Image 1 (tube, helix red, strand yellow):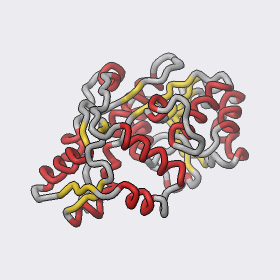
Image 2 (image 1 turned 90 degrees about the vertical axis):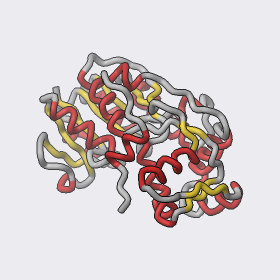
Image 3 (image 1 turned 180 degrees about the vertical axis):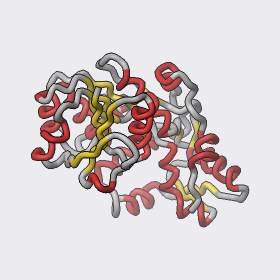
Image 4 (image 1 turned 30 degrees about the horizontal axis):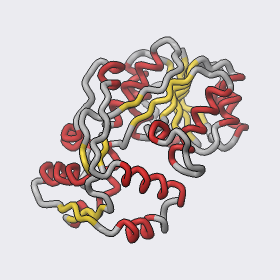
Length: 274
């Protein structure tokens, strides 16, 4: 078995690669610049998902693929099917569940389109649909350093999931017989943004305030740096979950064989304060 792993330098992709190597699988790490990819096992190949000319060498001899969503995947999906790929594991998003009729340009539409692209060419696809990554905490880094994290919806709830758990589920799926399914992956507990900030303060041993700010002002500021469709998606999600506990699933334990790691565990083992 040869597995092509895209995004092999990312938090999820790097762990997928490591897990497959530990299982003795022939892993082909892919990226625009192969020289920047890990060289401690497996092979490396140039792949630009926006450049169809790079697909052939990357897919030659590959029967399984780990993919993250980037741009329009239709051309790559067709090439994968033509190359004989038997199973794709796609890092999708729970937003597809939350918005069954997604707004164009939003997060849900972006991921739903990728799922449809792979399934539309007949490639059995395990579309992993996690909620918010624990690593999203990094978006608050300046506020954490200053002791104040400004939030338009501090009581919006999510189930922060450790990226290593997503990778463990992906590895299990890649090692198993191909199945077309869409598991909803979550962390083990629903936490509001304010509660997450409180756990960060507890971990650091110093005060960090979760301060509510005007949503319209926050939206205007975010729109300066983030595409409008993404901003709209985030604010729809935060409004919908404001004061509403997020659903928790047992899919991580069911599929990986171990309980999902808690946010506290992620803070203790992965949180970088630098």
